[in-house]
Length: 450
Image (cartoon, rainbow, N blue to C red):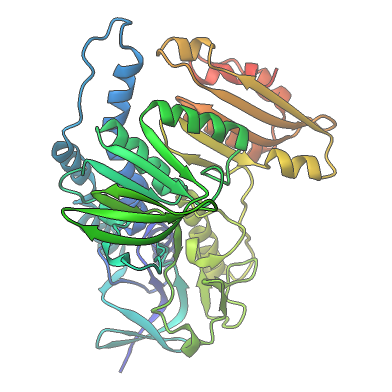
């Protein structure tokens, strides 16, 4: 006889973890299952380990900015030691997460999983029935169908490199390529980023991205724009990547070619058809309550769900909580995506919250764009930095914050102030009246709105 649960959560990342605990604490019988170690992308293969490696780059960058201003020799990154620092965080995660679930009363299962009916799952040799199922499987690196694709390294593998190669080509100009490129460049690698478009990080403000590209070049990062990967081949002891461009192809020699061409939802292995779970463009189709549009027993949250939410950890956690609430109390709660900050952790970082300038100008809003070149501001001068800019978009009639775009050191933390204001309905005038600790990056907010 199959085991029976009130809820089975597929995928033990942050969305699944929080949903499982919320439901078991409310008295529901809950099981979780993952064929990978518990922790998900963010904790094991994404945000957190990346930020651990970035710390080494931050130290090198901080010393470089202060060279000749009281700081002597620039430190160098010892890659193996930095990787060990990263693993000091990631290695304990699966055991700690499973222990916390066990302690909460959640049944923890491991193995490949697929639907075998509307409310039935096959987990290895074990069959499980569930009154409700929450799919929270996240995303995986997008595969590139080019000759020599077997020579490519994905983001997961990059985060496990025992040694950093001397020459690295990153394919794609999204978060993965740009963030890793900045880490690798500060670690001494020769780095190139190839992108099909005319600039990277297409979701961010183009004026600020252009400034980031220029500062990236000064940090030693080369760019090949308008370039698509055609093939990768091994020659001698290295790799050669052929990039197609309008004016002809070029070849780039590298020791490592990293596939940074985005991520796709990881749902192909679930046999969704057996459960009559509709999906399109690689994501599960859901209602505003995160319930499957075709199977009332199934919910989806995080990157695998077709919602308006950005593919970010805080959004996944929020959607997991919304789905869990609807499992427990019926469909009464919807997700709130207002004021969610998105950050590319380059050096310096770039931030977006809310509407782009283009979208704002095309709307029916009375738009006021408040742009500031911040390179000469005190908060930059103090650390020796020479780049920075902000763009805050305000509705002149209502004083509502429509969009916030930041580029500079420390701006990821400043973003949280704007995000809180936007989610709480505060106006630009409220932020201008804020009395901040001074001098801090946060104390620049009133000037950004001036």
